[in-house]
Length: 385
Image (cartoon, rainbow, N blue to C red):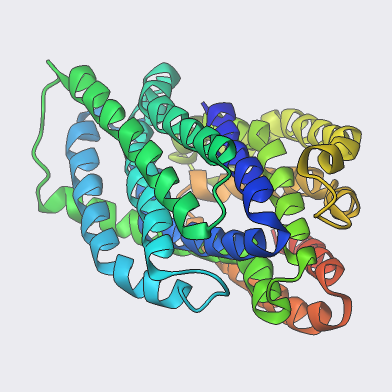
């Protein structure tokens, strides 16, 4: 499931990096970072809320999913135009390009993920895959079109991505209707919206802060260095490190239902569950770092000579998955025990460190300053957890 999502994202990065070139791809990477922030602000908190509610009470499944889906469409409708106007300030980004990427990354992909969260909460990963796979395949097909037709503008690339994602979403929605047939349905009432709101606000705030901490460097680099090739090189290296970390994301997703169930008995029970998984987390993180180092020479071959220092940036970021495996294992019991607010507080402190470090280091050291700021942020959060 997560591997397919990573394949879709990687295919789009590969296609657009080759078609647009380093300078324009740097602007697209900054736009993608902003859509990630928008996704965190509107969708991801609801997805976590659905997973938690369903894991603890399956009778709430249909009502909480309906409430989440309606809330998502309302929020995205209100956020789309302000987002597009803000994003159009980036070099080479038009309003239509921003709207297209917002629609496919936030509305389309986010809605499919919110519905799939119901099945993750029920530990039915096949059901979740059934809903997410069509969207991912549609986006892979769009990336193939971008690659094959040599799309040269950010606007054209994002429109193609929207068409592919929307086609996949139509198939995903049809599958959801079929899977939901015969299931006793409960209309969302005030209780559903209050439950979603209480938990969603905390998760949304945390995800927004976490995503901001991950992506502020790409936006800052684009704003500071414009369309310099190093901006695109660093953006690709960071994305590759994230995509390589998909096994860790899958491990966390599989662990959350267990953490929520044990966390209902208190933080000590949740931490005990996390300790039993610590070896798996570290193994996944270390293995990912090793893979990044091993495949880094291929990055230059795949992406071409127009991305200077790409391998160096990738090697500099290679230890990030290992560091984050420690951070995740220490912090996730807080979420499982209903103390996500404490986790958000630590992320907020990390964001402050990140913003300050980027502001000081990027003007002096460029992309390497962003690398240092990233590790400084992770270390600060581990110490606080």
